[in-house]
Image 1: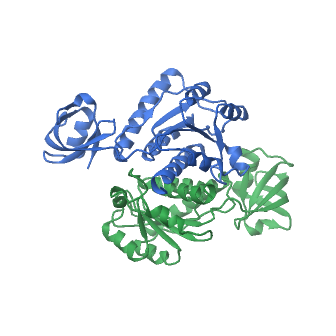
Image 2: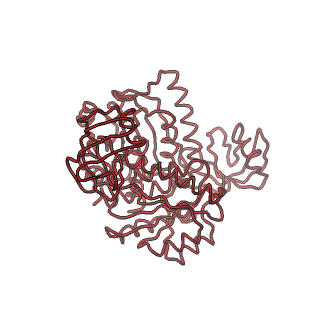
Image 3: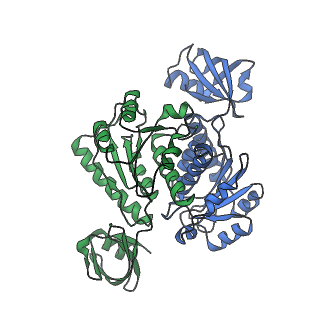
Length: 250
Length: 250
């Protein structure tokens, strides 16, 4: 069933009204008709199987048939803090990271980042990334859309870290020195409900100074195996491993 | 250190001569000079730290200083059998899969694949994918380049499967029915040196008939967590989990 995220205001008792792009998508792209079923998620973790009463390009109405709770979120809340990468890499880090269960994304500028975002560009990018996250969440059958935070500085990252239970950073030098135990050790000490902050540097990696600052703020520097991963691959590795550890390995 | 793959013929005693694109890359892109060090891999798992004796755009000479064995391969040999996806997805499945340690890739056509490759297109694509694998292996510091096999049919896939120890297929219906134990169970019964064949369907997934055929050929159908992954994400999840299981979790 096709899935759509709704705002609280769209729901009135057991009736949901859908307008804008979603209504147009239902009528024009999916060619839905009354009687068809969809899933609406209210982004609080509640999903509803609904039956369409009316469908037009500008407005659709449906009735809630069944309500069920979120089964699609990781048992731990993972924030991907990504050093600003080049080109459109951040767009697909957000798309793939959403599929893989990230709870939020925090793009940050750092000493080796080539890309710089001013406030205007940052706002525009954040909005676009939010749209990508929403679409990826719908496609991945997630009932919560991850939050894409406004880009910040490395100092903002250190400040933000205070609120997380587990803090890990993918560090190329750790990989090169065959460090292979820290990441698994961190996951083993993580309990369901904990929050994990995963830091990944930009293409040039984290500087030694930044790595030291992270350690002094309670981060563990991890290698992710003997191969050197590109910046856009590290977060996918971490999220896949976290899913495997908590959702499959049990 | 920059890494290059060499053919046996390029090595003469402890001297290696490099021509073609690699020499041009060293001289023009990396601006290397005599005395600079590089790593040469002979694609048998042996890597050599070398010192440059001469560098020109068409020819470079270097001397082997140190030889070491492969430390970059997964302890299990993983083949990613990917149902032909749309657009350039296969290119980055090969790029990312190479970073994550795949030993080989087998693109196959299946009932729900929209993309069709004739022999000519297949040969051209395979050559291009091989180049992407080589570049990704150099960047990931791998000492072996994964093999990109010529595309085949679903029947070819079933035939090929006979040579693998462990056979698993990512199956959307398994994910939807909350199947979460098969993939981890398969990895738990895998021993270092074993070969794993991971099958991923195209965008439309594997048909029920194809899933049945896989099962009757000794495959286990796996869910990869409660979220529905796109075809290009499933192989990255599987490779990351395999690396985590065997290289980090220990």
